[in-house]
Length: 77
Image (cartoon, rainbow, N blue to C red; front, side):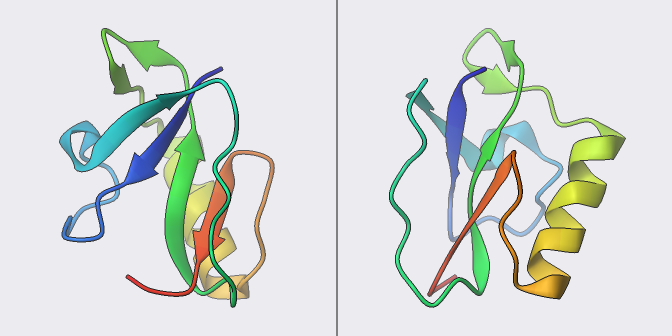
């Protein structure tokens, strides 16, 4: 599955337009790991398919300040 970097100016993690496709390699995100950096998701013509399960995984990662299989965190919004 490809990785997508979250646009720090985005206000809705469920909106595919707030992500930029970067490819099959996970990005290196800055520490400390506090805010959403990137997600791994199925591709829909260059945009991520943001499922309810992925939204929950994003929320858990951010709330617990812990990265997961499909969610990477970074230091800044």
